Amino acid sequence: MSRRRTTVYWTGFCIILALLMLAPLVLPEFWRRFLTEILIWGLLAMSSDILIGYTGMVSFGHSAFFGLGIYGAAAALLSVNPPSLLLALLCGLVAAAAAAAFVAYFSTRLRDIYFAITTLIFSQIFYVIIFTWTEVTGGENGLTFSRPPLAIPGLFSVRFTPDTLHWFVLGVVVFSYLLLRRITQSPFGMVLQSIRENEARTRAIGYPVERYKMVAVMLSGLFAGLAGVLYALQNQFAAPDFVFFLVSGEVVIFNVIGGIGTLVGPIVGAAFFLLLREGLSRFFTEYYLIFVGLIFIAMVIFLPQGLLGFARRWLNH
Amino acid sequence: MEIAFDQLLIQTINGIVTGMILALVASGLTLIFGIMDVVNFAHGELFMLGAYVGVIILAATGDFWIALAAATLLIALLGAVIYLTTLRPLLGRDPLYTILATFGVSLVLQNYALWQFGPVARKIEEPFTGQFTLFYLSYPWYRIVIALLSAAIIGALWLFLKFGTWGIWIRATTQDRVMAQAMGIPVPWVLTGVFAIGAGMAAASGVLFGPLVGVTHVMGVDWVLKAFIVVVVGGMGNLAGSIAAAIFISLLEAYASLWVSPAQAVIVSFVVLILTLLFRPTGLFVPTPK
Image (cartoon, rainbow over the protein chains, first blue to last red):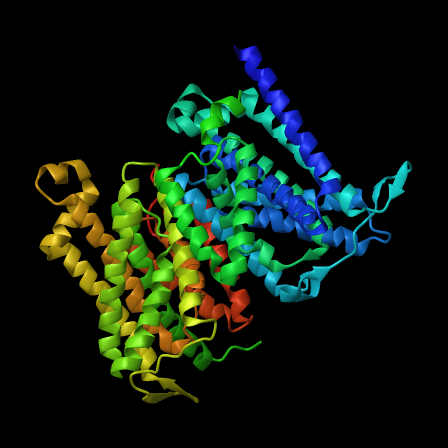
């Protein structure tokens, strides 16, 4: 039985991967860009799932890690000429990891609800700093920069086309998914899930719960930063709006809509949300969030497992 | 830079005035959290809607005090409706779901306000424009009245919790929900009532604060963030702690804005929060249990 499940899982995985790889060849320009964007937001939501779904901590501060990833990449791309992809990745990840270490140290001192509030407040700290430090961050106007070539130093260097950018993003997202899936199934991931189920008992068994939580927040922040770097590559633009806590709120919405604790659920949630926004905003311009909010409330009440909740056990198999 | 004594005194008064409004917002939040275990993300939106209802009723009746009372009552009613439709079904589930649900409510309310009232700021006229001379400034009496009124509302809440029948029910429900139910206290109605009271307090502070800034659909966001900081610094669910923390943080921010811009002065409250989390995670004014 379990062997068959594994086969079905990997077959499904390969089919979806193949479809996503072929997509840019057949989709028109607008939808190709849209799909790349879904993958990036999906990665951000997936990174948050490590906390919400597997450790049982709702983070309202993921915009900080995402934003620092964007600004870190921007700093690398603006200060080094010619722009280097590897350096952008490195700087974005370091910036996000530093922010995550800072937030993790303070916010894991408090439980459940307090964690949500403190991560929210901490992301606002970064927002205020980025918003007011105009000389470095460009303040409200943000920063624009050019896209680096897809290069491995000494080997090759080609310019990104929309297609190769999509494949690059897809590659990073799939790699992150497989890595995160492996992590959630590792002994470390098991401890995180046991914290979610019963924190007091996990502590009683002898696990240093605080340390595990801190590592979970840092891991999550690191992948959120990776999503930020990808976003910087895609849009060549950094703005303080990406650090504002509404982005964190949207990330939580992606998770709940898609199904927490599944890793792919958040990507589906992001796709659902962005499609909904695309569809609704044609009729209701900026008020579409009223309907998004109503759908979200209804899902919290009636379908807390999310769209993919039914497949949760199977996906984590 | 030399800071003159008179500037310091003016900032002290400013700090206490904003601190009292913040205390009013935060005490509604604390009340709801302490009694119901619900973190109300929509609190800032109730504050904002209160201000809008104040604008409308002021335009219709021309009387500030009627507007204040009506906005408080209407938003309290709205609070009860929100509780019954979105939070009652979540009773008994993980409190995290209440954060998600109230976040959804805040999205709906904020964008409803944008849709209904547009992005242009509205103005509430001050009920009286008298001023008194404070050194070289003429300081509006209205600000002093706001501080006193906020204090009066918080005082009334305290008396109500201490002596009213409903107050006793509320405190009993906080202590032991199941036992309170067994003693015949209508717990579901007590919870609805508490949410309504918290919402009404947010609306009242919105109307009171309206004349100082324009009324816009995003005015609640800043306040709810500040109120969250206050609630964490004061100790979650601790009413007196929140009030003290509100005044403390507002005073610090007021002093800080002597040197830096008000946007950067916010960082002071973040520093207070970080220090509190480091050394007194259960609240600045509460001894940490060993």
